[in-house]
Each structure stands twice: as C-alpha cells, then as structure tokens.
Length: 325
Image (cartoon, rainbow, N blue to C red; front, side, top):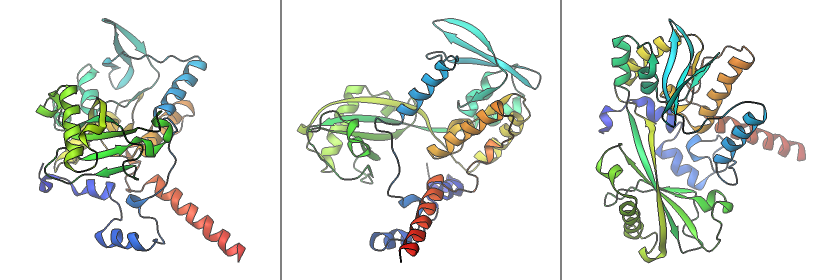
C-alpha cells in the first residue's frame, strides 16, 4: 500500500515524538523526556500475556459467571435502538443469550453485519470500507542458547518477506523451557487469503528457516522445528478515507443503547495493548458502576500510558536524588 494513501494519523499515533534527530540523540545521551517509541523497560507476564486472560476467565467462573469458548456470535440482537443480547453458535446449535449490556471487541465491520435487524444501507456500506491487515507468525525452535539480545528486531532487507522477529526468550526466560534453545517468532504481514496466508505450515516453516539464514541471523541447520499461528484483523488500516467511513459507523453505534465497543478492533483504532485493555475496563465500569465513559476518545491525544508511567518514574527518581543531596 503506497504511503501516499495512508492517513498521517497512523504515524502520529504509533511513533509519537520520534524523529531522526531524537533517535540518534538517544543512542548517545539519555533524553530528559521519555520518547514513547524508545522506551526500554516495562513489565511482562512471566509466561506471556495469556496469563492475564486465563486468570480473568478463572475469576469470572469463580464469581458465578460463564466463559464460552468456540461459540462465535452469529447475531447481535436489538429491538429498535436497544441491544438485547446475542445469538451464539456452539456445536452447530444456535442459542440466544439475553444481555443488559453487550461489550463487543469484534472488528467493527463484523459487528455491523451481525446486527439484527440489519442496519441502514449507508452504515453497512461505510463499514464495508473499513479494512484490516492480517499477519502470521512462524515460530522457530533454534538450537542455540542466545541469538540476539533484543526483544524484537525489525527487518528491512527487501530480499526477504519477514518484517519483524520476536525473541520470546528475552521477553521472559520461562517462555522457553529448554535454556539451550531459543524460540524466534518470525512475523509476516499479509492479507487473509493471499498466497502467503494460504501456504501450508510446513512451507512457511521452511520459508522462515531460509530467511533467517539469508539475513545471517541463524544457520538453517540450527532451526530444528517450528509451527505457525495466523492472526486475522491484526491491524486496522488507516487509509485516506477511513475516518469518514468510521464516523458514519460510529454515529450509528453510539445511538444504540446497551452496547459498548472496545479494543483495537472494536474501535478500529491502532491502540497499544494498554489502551485496548483500558477501554475494556471502562466498558465494565459503565456496566458495574454506571459510570459514563467515551471509549472512542481513549488515546485520541496519541499519548501512551507507558509514557505517563515512565515520566512519573523519572520525576520520582529526580525527587529522590534531590533529597539524597
């Protein structure tokens, strides 16, 4: 996709405060003000982010709630402007689940298409213009204790398709049970249904093995096994017309009672994970405590929560240094 077709809002949100000058300066001098994109330290779950969601699910069940997996929503039911529940499918059987409030994190176009009765044609057409970029991860088990010191690296070599490589062991040593091995996650950005997406797992593992060898990161014979995970709707696309189309959809959805949308896909906003989690928290508070929150406004100032925390830590260290002196 040509950069000329991308909205400038994407860059403003994802690489806040970063310039070539600030990046070069940060290589040699610690900046007084935290640059979001160059944050060097944050907390990470010992066994990955899934620990949070498994814990949350366990607490819901312990509190008397129910978590249904493998039960896709086939319809979001409404009576006029009021959402009344959802219809889910499980093992080929559909069932209606009544609800006082529905919080949707599915992609906005899918939510619009699932509303029953159907939405006005103009809203449906606007939702159809909202697009996503998909990606897949080729996870290679490498017969080496250490490969590179970073959590991830971006790859710009035009001779390979891989765009980013995660080093899961450097996120947390417990992510790799065998200390003599390293687990690398090779990320490929693609579109669902394209040639890369349709390649078999074996073909993708072979491709990843060739490409890490091509860029000189790992010898091909050191990659002893691998697997593939495909992720749909990973990145909302900010093309030149997305804001107008999203505005049409948003105005309709905001007119529905008992419905909240949250998360990266639910808001069609390229949020960082902490912002996505915050929208879920605020949606829950609106139900549990009757608080009024505009979830669409979260992160509209393009400010990261990590940046706020990092600046608070810097201020506290400065205060401690002054007291010590």
